[in-house]
Image (cartoon, rainbow, N blue to C red):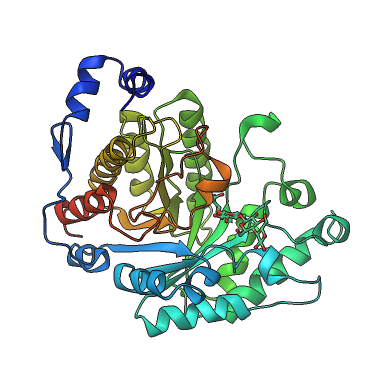
Length: 374
Ligand code: G3I
């Protein structure tokens, strides 16, 4: 590690003493042993032994074109989420067409490998097809949305572990007191688009577990606390009105150096659990953007965050599943959206670009092993 790297770590951890203690270990992170000497067990099996589910979001092309990666995914994952294939952009080539080919391929893959299958996502403002902007408006928005939900959920009826019905509805930049983002759905239908979507999904598959999925709920910051309060208000209102909602997906795209184990987040987890909702850690990865260049140091700090975060959330027994967003650094959206300023490849996932388990992989295993059975 060079001097700049040391200084960077010192800033992140607030002191050179902390840096020295964290940097001086081999297979452990500071005083924390993430278990790199333990017996390697499939994460799906470790999770299952605790009544939990472990899995990942992966796009078809990464499984189809990369047999080694595919073998890793099928060995480690007990649940699969199409990273792209069930979004409007993929499903809706034209206003009057549905293309289920990608989603169906992944469903077959999941079946073949005895994996559960999770749907993502029916309502989002992003990943919309090119035709959307000119074809959808306040007159037809509601019927187009409900028809989409009904057709897609019916197509997979009886096959889904769960559906992310609505994704990322909140964001305070639009100045609404309820915190809802001014998405096309909000503008065309009004705030009731959320409950309309859940009712439509329930009608199409009454047995499906229906989730609201959201980002930035984890950090112990004022802006995340504001979002937690807004999301809790929504969930409370939906439950009080008898809207068919069964769970909350907490995305957990977290930073290696962020505080994501604070008392306000813990209170939120308990409040969601008290509503009778299941919680899924739905899109976990740990950004190493602000860490020093040394891969050894980065891997230790990332592993520590994986371990501490998972140990923390898994203390809440309403948390029933952990899914990472991708499985190997060979394929990760972080490489495009949050690259490092020094150009070094990012390492946010449990397996490195060569599919070798990193310290983070061991940290996940240890956190799952230590979780209370549910
Ligand atoms: O497939 C084309 C490829 O042919 C083309 O060369 C390339 C050029 O940019 O684009 C490719 O498509 C991209 C696709 O990822 C596959 O890499 C899309 O432009 C890009 O928008 C798409 O991004 C995905 C994004 O959602 C939007 O669908 C990310 O991979 C995916 O990880 C991300 O996932 C979201 C969750 O759904 C919701 N929560 C946040 C999470 C991360 O943003």
